[in-house]
Image (cartoon, rainbow, N blue to C red; front, side, top):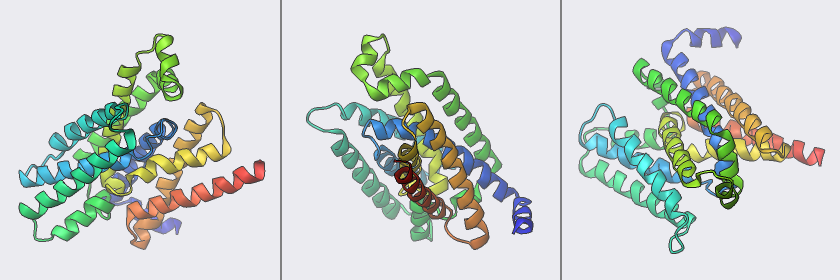
Length: 277
């Protein structure tokens, strides 16, 4: 098996997939703990559907660089979702559902009306489940992913204390001088970037798994915010590597295999948590 892995790693597209897979898993797990604790676990699901709508619009206009539309649209939606979550008339879960379903519906409608592909169902399946996208990355896309991932990690490290304060008690954070609204805006932008990066890895329907499962798994074993965050990051990277190592030789969908690894890791962590209790 080791010889087979060495052979696969000799292909550039496999190396690209591993690099992007590890970076996306790392970035998504860093903010996963914050989103779970703030009761915004499914914001990844909502934003991924928005990104799907953005991809549909980019396809209609035959844009080769879909990031030009997808990233700005997703960032704006993330800001609206976090702002709307504080609206007494439209609660956070309702706002996520509205934007999620609306964007997904309009995206699929546009792709059908202005179809530019002879294999529409295949394109939609790849976008929703990330079945082959991760194995068709170009060197330019990989460099962009590396650059954005480095920015996300740096932002998280620099603003760690403020993110921690806003996660647990926004009112107390404001009282101590933290600009909570600006911090929430920063979190929204970073989340949007991570979601767009994860589209090629697991598809729009499975992105929430990368955000939720590592965080919940870490919470089964550790109690402090720092311990949960670091363990979540390490576990997410391990699951991404495991999923890629299994999926590429076996020919299974990469995104689904990575999520399956996250589910198994969650089950193991639950068992460990019960034994330690």
